[in-house]
Image 1 (tube, one colour):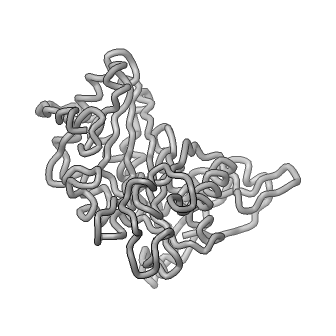
Image 2 (cartoon, rainbow, N blue to C red):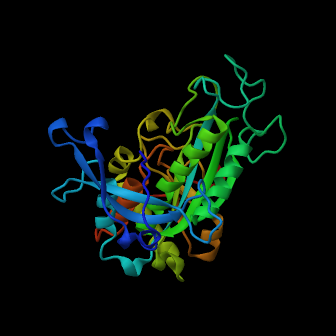
Length: 340
């Protein structure tokens, strides 16, 4: 949700200068009617791309999390959970790069952009990925506007591309360090929805918005790298982290978004949610190691399981919590890279 207010310019210079605010939690299902006040605590500031000024000042967007008046984090405040998982690990300098996929529909919420009303595209998926041309690319006006708005806001948006299913798009945020990844991804989603308002296009983060036919779902692949993974010999640190993720596969799946069982079937560039796998350059695995990382002996890994509607705070927090554990876990045999 979002609210707008007016403050003096000095309040907008730093997040610690901003006052707390509140909203009616009974209207959002976050508080009872007889004690409905939910406290908004400012966490991060970004320039507002929708209200630019020409006087040298900047209107701002403020990322907030939610608390009770007594100072307890709401159950829906997943940011508070993530903050705790990062505490005491500043020396790890953990990077997250998040690949947000989404699907654009006409306002009927049934017809994806580029699809005939009430029907299917005449061509199967294939030519739409990273595509160009009016017969292949549907939604570039949205992603281009999103890109510009995120850059203006100061987000670490690092790219966009058309995705495999027509009407499906992707952008990437990061690398960002620690809790900043969740903050930036959540703010980018807000900006995306605001851009879609301007273009009067419906955007869904559902991981499988089209279940009939042979069409890819949508995910939020999450790339992870700690300081030790980026140093010489980091590939062994990466493998150990992957083994830990495998040992808690079901716990991660439970926190990686709703409707993911429709997407993680073992088809359409996914692994089955019932089994944990990893491999080099294998997009049919739960976790992928890039060929550059394998060749360099250091770098990052990609967790391909999170769904497009996942909570980035839960995903980044759960990954951090798991890979930082001091536990012995079984070694997992990688999938044959020939299966990539």
